[in-house]
Image 1 (tube, rainbow, N blue to C red):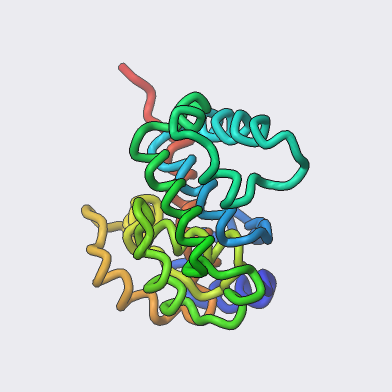
Image 2 (image 1 turned 120 degrees about the vertical axis):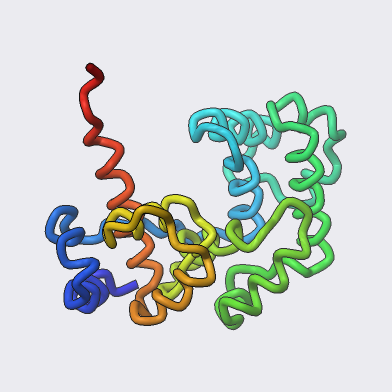
Length: 210
């Protein structure tokens, strides 16, 4: 992603100008890894604190006892109880095993194959996996594949950031935000990052309790 070009483009939009002035350059990091690994990590992080998710993943890595991330075949050879022992819930175990099965079957593309697929094709393909919804795939698109023009309109933080930036009483509905966000193309991923930062700014400025 060309963060500087994106920032220059978004800074010309009144909604983003004050956010960019307050936040500065976009520092969004992209970690290139196989989509299979990215999906397993995404499932681990669903609905739990980041440290708890990393602890579970750490136990899984310890089971493999090798530098690389546990491959799909290794996951499928593990009894479900071993995954539960890592701290994964029953639903997470089922989802992780389905990711592994779909990877072995070829539904989950390699990183090289994913590079040749457009965003919507990848979303349509990966939401067939248990526990993987559109939002999860969008996070993979942004933070693993480095796609520059993804707007996760179902994300609470993105909608809240827009609400605050636009001075609205309520968050926009996803469909409305998708329409509004067309103006931010082809840098909607960076726009989402700045909206997340706007939501974070509000959390840090809380009124004193009286």
